[in-house]
Amino acid sequence: MSGMDIDTPIKNKGKEKVFNLAAEIDNLPWVEKYRPKTLDDLVSQDNITSTIEKFIEAKKLPHLLFYGPPGTGKTSTILASARQLYGDKFKSMILELNASDDRGIDVVREQIKNFASTRNIYSSGFKLIVLDEADAMTNQAQAALRRVIEKYTKNVRFCIICNYVSRILPAIQSRCTRFRFSPLEKEQIEDRLQVIIDAEHVNLTEDGKEALLRLSKGDMRRALNILQACHASYDRIDETAIYNCTGHPDPKVIDRIARWLMTEEFTTVYTKIEEIKRESGIALPDIITDLHTYIGVIDYPAKSRIILLKNLSLLEYRLGEGANEQIQLGALVGTFKLAQDNLA
Ligand SMILES: Nc1ncnc2c1ncn2[C@@H]1O[C@H](COP(=O)(O)OP(=O)(O)OP(=O)(O)O)[C@@H](O)[C@H]1O
Image 1 (tube, rainbow, N blue to C red):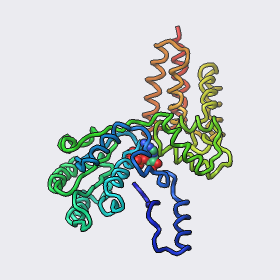
Image 2: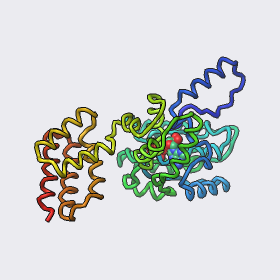
Image 3: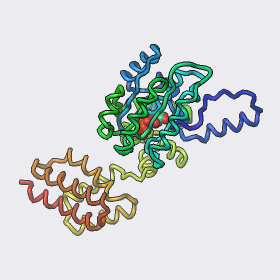
Image 4: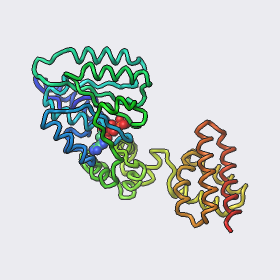
């Protein structure tokens, strides 16, 4: 959700206040400081932005449903659209609500009622209500929301945002125009990152950038948060800095672990992994996630790979449920031994 608006005009403010505002902007998380202000600033999702621009030009906005993975620009798109639609007055024309608010639908309904029923004296037309995290609402709350949408359709448009569209009632889906946001391409994240790297004078090496792009997996928010955290701790950000900062295992470490698992005897490999986990502070679930990608490239017959994949998924599930890491590490080593027994 948007924090402070860094475009706020600095009118009638003394020098000190201007200075304070500059300092405040400087302290903002980069995800807010560099949130796209216009639809043109948004990378990718071109078909979505061009369709919305057409709605805005015609001043005919339907109810919207944005869905897709985190950090792909759903909130930014609706905020940039609101700026384009309402200009300077956009703050008074938009209400941002977190739909998963645990105070329940009644509070949300009350806020919507108050907002929708106050007329804006400067402008006619509809106001905009943004409901973030709508997939966390109960079915009952969504059913209530359906009636709320109908009741205020005359002067309010809703933008419902969620990660999983399947968790939104079909009745709500059918009242909205749906847009699916996809994970950003590596090149798109890279282009946008470069703007921020230049503006903040970040010293990022090529291998650091590669690691950052790999770890962000199409999520721009994740990329920016990692970059800002590393920038605060390191003068020069290379691959090791990125992995240290995120606590994610270095691919070289995973490489070593995979080699041990495929060549060493049971007790030796178990002890070595225990040691490396202690030294570099990496967790078993992270090792398993990265080994999973590794299995795609190792030279094992299909039968052995199936054993590995099946058992890794079991291990991941058990660890997620809170199983003992040492016992699961034993099971990991055992799985590789089993896969080797099936090499022929
Ligand atoms: N398409 C994009 N172009 C440029 N910047 C982006 C884009 N998508 C995300 N960002 C950056 O990532 C930050 C988070 O984006 P945003 O809040 O819009 O994501 P979201 O899809 O709403 O995520 P969530 O589902 O977690 O709410 C923004 O502040 C912006 O800096």
